Length: 254
Length: 235
Image (cartoon, rainbow over all chains, first blue to last red; front, top):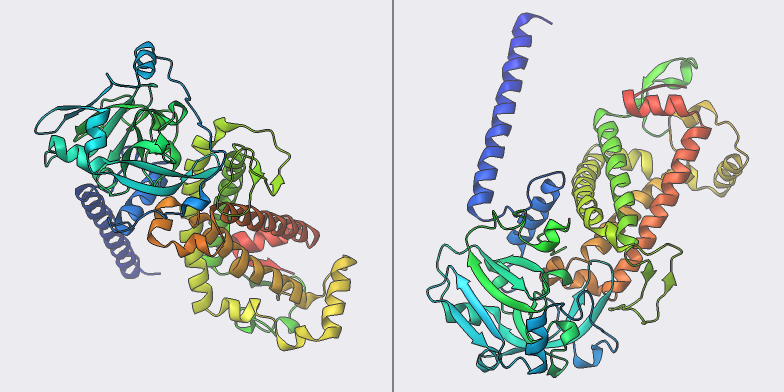
């Protein structure tokens, strides 16, 4: 091989590598610009988390609904799972009063901070849906949920345009977050009824989240406070929730 | 004779002649496939440990009649890393597998080497291959360069039936993707059915892997490894 072909080969390779690096750089900037990077994009598994989140964000639109079932398919023995009674004294006293003194706080990047009572939430337009709760462990069960779409609660507070995530803090010390696409989806509810009854304590009374296009652990129970934010950095490990902090994916659409 | 293009006039050549056997792309995708398959297997077991029971139909909950209770000790603490590793492995498996299948179709690798040839389907040949296989007879020289009917059917089944089935049944368990394409899960008859099919399709791939590695060992581990790493083999 003479020097000419070697040089040509080298130049070709350098050009190829630069093109690849450029494409990667443009891709990263675009992904960030269009909100395709999840908060847990770093670390060993970050590439997989990012590919999954980005591809589902591209594929899923507001029109894509989780499957809904008929009432006859409701599971007979769907008992509560995880926390079934929060270990928190003020919760207990509120519970025995039928949650009459309970208030849901909505704050952060909103035009006005609001505090809603359970009856105020029940006065908002409601949605009823029979959906399948799919647990990451492998089990699944169908139930009917009634609640106020989270979007109507957020609209009552007025979400500011720089909002990117909605953060949920729960009485049982769990916390988590959703991006705006899932937070504003019509099936995302603050549910207060299950199978036609008041939401049982074991299922997150008085109000739990329903996020039907993700796995069960994103549907947090005992929601107490909702904070609209533009960043998840500095909260816990910055991964967007207590489950991600414990090693679970932030985005659970798979 | 299958795959003549890759094997120049071997009948006239001696036992020690070195001839190319696997293309660089096949070797690369083979080993990436091997690594991602192990990632999927280990993490799949980690996820399964959280609920080592299989159900049929849409739902499955504690107390519901299960199809099979697997003899594994339940352990809910392994599914966090298990899931992350599983989906990283799945991305590699699908992208790498896609490249392999596409190139195999374009280069006619499947057409030449996997599709059974007419004479291989003759009853007498089938019986001969099967008895040779079962008696662990050392293959004749031609068989070093071409796949017999059993190999062809095994590779076809793994590549075009079992692997796609694990991918489809896996995607059918994704609540996000199912919201886009509900048919993904409906063809399996429900979420839990998809999970059960996923388990059995993967189990059959593990059987394929065991037989594959056993046959490679029986036929000469080092020459076969050399063929899949360097691309050259001596019979």
